[in-house]
Image 1: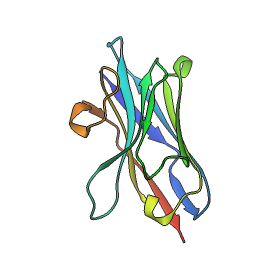
Image 2 (image 1 turned 120 degrees about the vertical axis):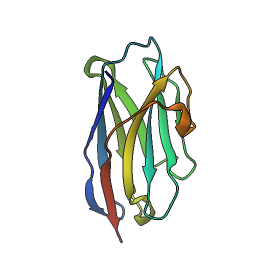
Image 3 (image 1 turned 180 degrees about the vertical axis):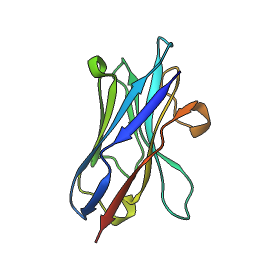
Image 4 (image 1 turned 45 degrees about the horizontal axis):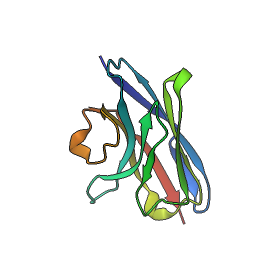
Length: 123
């Protein structure tokens, strides 16, 4: 059974940094995508960043390019999202998601979801 467990959320002032972690387990696919999505109050869920787990390809939403970095530690089955230069508009619940195959991006392509971790950025 696939499980995704996020950690690392919290409250920070604008300009600050946070690092989110997603511990993944139970995969049977040879290739899969791991991604971060977020949902702010009153807004649609949006993709933030994606990595081909076991590969090297990454993809970012335009709104976070140059500020966020997605990475992986294969030995620990863990994905990270380093968030720098945070803005109040980054405030949202952040979700880790996984799906079979590489280079997924649309939320409906991701079969497994974590419970989410809250990120709050104050001005």
